[in-house]
Amino acid sequence: MKNRYYVLFLLLCIISCGKVESRDPVNLYQKKIIKNSILKNIELNKIEKERFLKIIEIDSMSKYQMTNKGFWFKISKKSNIELKPKSGDKVTFFYNIRDLEGNDIYNDDNLKPIKYIVDKEDILPALRYGIKELNVKESGVFLMPSFLCYGYQGDGEKIVTNQPLILEINLISLNKY
Image (cartoon, rainbow, N blue to C red; front, top):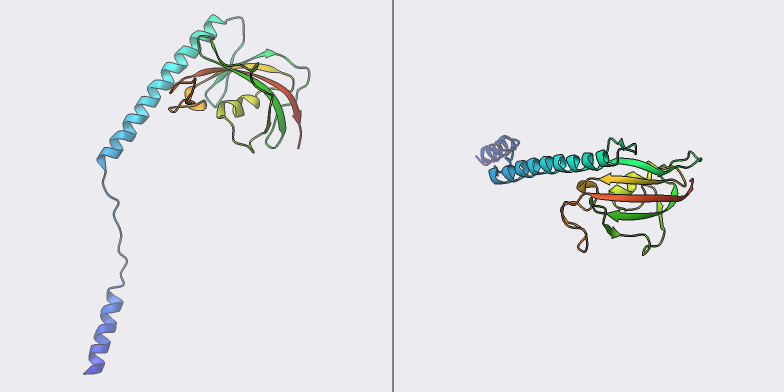
């Protein structure tokens, strides 16, 4: 009799070891928030693009190039040296930040040259991508959408939320590594 209970207990243990699949909770509110956020960002990107195209149209004497990262740039000071930064290179540069009306937000008169190891240090995405478009001793003007700048947070001081910016970058030196 004791063996029967033991066998029955063992049989129940084996049968009950089936895999239980958990279900994700259904949160329709979160899906709605994400969808609204996507639509808002698409509209914001469209508005920023239109503003950039107006700036490019006004500055028709310059040749702007669009990148696959979503920003436009022009080379304002050419260099004879064709050497662009790559990942791991050490660069030194100055930069200015202006709003789309051309007003200075941060000016390099107050800033020291920035030393940066390309793709190895944390830096504003707009600067990271902009630097890679320049040759050594070149300067460029970059029309950067807000998502590459300070995004929905701003910088907490002078740059407001979702503000597209104009960056002027002057690549002073490059050391290959």
